[in-house]
Image (cartoon, rainbow, N blue to C red; front, side, top):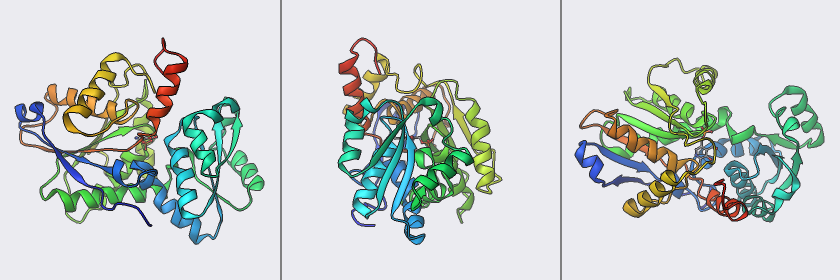
Length: 317
Ligand SMILES: Cc1ncc(COP(=O)(O)O)c(C=O)c1O
């Protein structure tokens, strides 16, 4: 796969809080995997693209919201790897002018806007069958890309971390939306030859995300991973809900990027680092432990946030 930087760098971070608690923090810079198909999006798409190629289909169809990182990445992947792409988008056609979808269209993606009610059927068999009839030569990838091919791709991040860290890694931290990435990380640890004792902590970006515990447990079951005691979900760092950016989070993201030189956005990675730093302050980690935070990309979302804030300056998007 051309132009993919693999393995992505594992970067050690210096920060006074880490010194105070005698912790070592690395960031797995998956945001640098590719300029346009970055982060967990590349991990999740890689084996989907290979599967589509082996099935000799020429189109990939998926689902997403109007500012979706997954849709943006899929459109880029189609453009770079020679697939036609199509997407079912939740919401009105006026979103076609937002920075995410404008770019997706420029990469050749066909968009179909549907009501929120219709979008809810995105995983139902009858709906998928009707889409398959409408797009007979398309490989259909679920919302966010999360399927068994995605899990396989994310597992590779663990293999890379193992080779790059040169020490036992006690914790891996990731931002969590659907739980697909967290599942892949836990599956990667379960499969590792060196019987890793690594704990995976997900920082949920959605409000009221407790239901995800059940979803992740069943994703793990589907992936035939029995290990269920080495992961957890932290649900108190949502900052009011998906894409809500209160001032405290905004300031944290700006300061974090200034101090470390690592770009973050407040919807996923900013919330993850905020949650991670709060957990450090709460004594969640033992002194001397090694932590890896997975940078899951998503930086294209910053353009959409800017656009929403210009339109509605009083209500943070
Ligand atoms: C940048 C970014 N980070 C993290 C996530 C969360 O990944 P998952 O849905 O696999 O939990 C997403 C998902 O949409 C994302 O776009």
